[in-house]
Image 1 (spheres, rainbow, N blue to C red):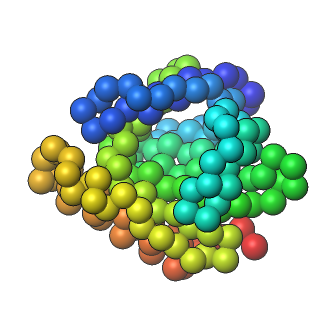
Image 2: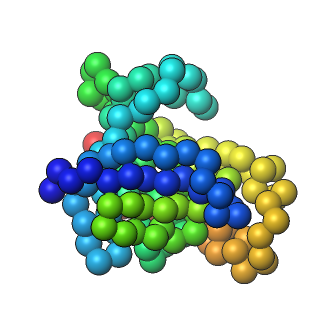
Length: 156
């Protein structure tokens, strides 16, 4: 598709904390997949080195409480892993995506090992009990997708 789109990362209160551009790769009635380049200085995050220019293939869903980012190395093009954000369902508009991040994250390595991060931060969020339950359910759904090697975790 190739059309530019702005991604807005919001906190649990709906306040924007980061925005960046990506390019639309595909779209369904309930999801959008975009491609974006990592635009920050190199950092190490849970054993994955993120470098400026790394390719992110990001899927946002309007009917699921998470989004999934596949991360590829800028030079080798190798899959580094997946970064999964537990979030409220995305608001997908013509040229914008809005995602309310709920702090809880799942890191999945290429060998399918996984790690839940930011549980302490999640526990301190001032969100409804329903949102907390939905977030925990979303985390369990993601872990089940990994265990069963369901897309996008089916890449060899």
